[in-house]
Amino acid sequence: MLALRPRVVRAIAGKELRSFLGNPTGYVFLTLFIGTSAAAAFLDDSFFGRNLADLATLNRYIAWILMFFVPAITMSTWAEERRAGTDELLLTLPVRDGEVVFGKYLGALGVYTVGLVFSLANLAVLMYLGEPDMGLIFANYLGYWLMGGLFVAVGMVGSMFTANATVAFILGALGCAGLVFAGAWPWSAGIVGTLVFAAVASLTWLVATGVARGVAIAALIGGVLGLAAWLGGLWPGFAEAFSHLSALEHVAWFGQGIVRLGDVAFFAGGSAIALVLCSLLLNRRHW
Image (tube, rainbow, N blue to C red):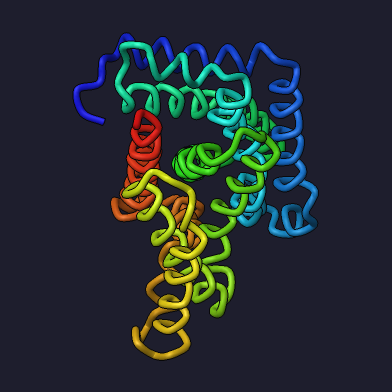
């Protein structure tokens, strides 16, 4: 991911952005996202009951909304290339893996950013109804953007494994769901931790060998180790440790108007790790 050429990254990002926004499906996505976010913000009875011009109700639902909408952006990032066979052409071009990955990431993030900008119509409603705290609104939207950036990176990893856009959507949604459910209930963090063990084991096998045979066995071994650490008591505090992977926990502070460095680092660092993983998986395809 080092020494990326800005010109190449911009070209790839522009291609991805034009591809999505040049398709009617892209505008359907934007319309649904804007409508859903507005409904979550204002159709909850508690919004009027609180008598405050803020986005507290949307803050409660935004992670669940993005869990489905962001994978809809990323599902074709790699899957469509593989289905059309253009990935082979892309791999023969004089571009680095990091440039391809980061360019595609910026393109998908650009699409999400466009949707987020249009959802600022929510702010117009708040200004009509009252006098919103602009600092609080800025922090809210910064949290939405950072969380969406992480979900975009996770969705891209899911799209790396298949040529079927629907399967890519499901894999991306499952990855994002793990980041949401990790802090939803006490027991869910243990399940997420076990799945992380399985995922790390399978990805390690795939990156190290470059072949799909044996991935299921590696995932099974990782899952068993995760269960032993959680239910067997080999790792005290296992569930609590993985509960900190919750996007809900970190975005909640933005909802209160508090921008903490640790929360910014969580979203930015998680995105970076997912992009490095994408680059490693793409590099294996050269072999």
